Image (cartoon, rainbow, N blue to C red):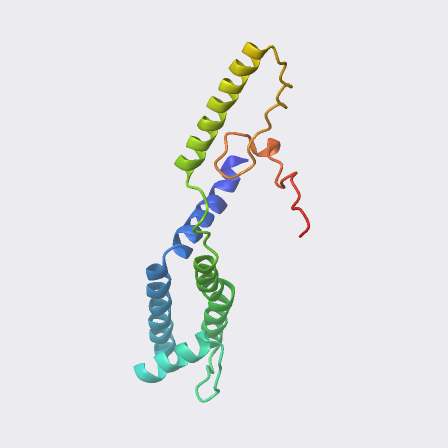
Length: 170
């Protein structure tokens, strides 16, 4: 089963790498325009300027109609260019810019989270020590549940996917 999923995992990793680099996105967009323009120019016997103009207009899905493919090879190229742009490149560019807008600068870093957990453990130990000196019985801690975030040690089937905590109404 893993062998069957390997190509899809590699494609997924490639897309993630591709999407997380604006430089790669822009270079690939420009490369796609140039390559499509060169191929179109050869297939449809157009000048390089007309061919690149056609590629830009087609990739942007504007479609002025001043230049359009006549041969089946040109039409196939147009379909591939439009599909690639609409289904892959434009969504990746949009997702990249959207992810830059929603970055939470107040979120704790991993090291800060680990330090907070260590501090809470120390406070719990001190509280148990003080309670033992005073003869007070502390309630038992609830059993630990696996962390459900990405990169957690919990196996995927043990992750909850949703938090049990609800926000208080304001």
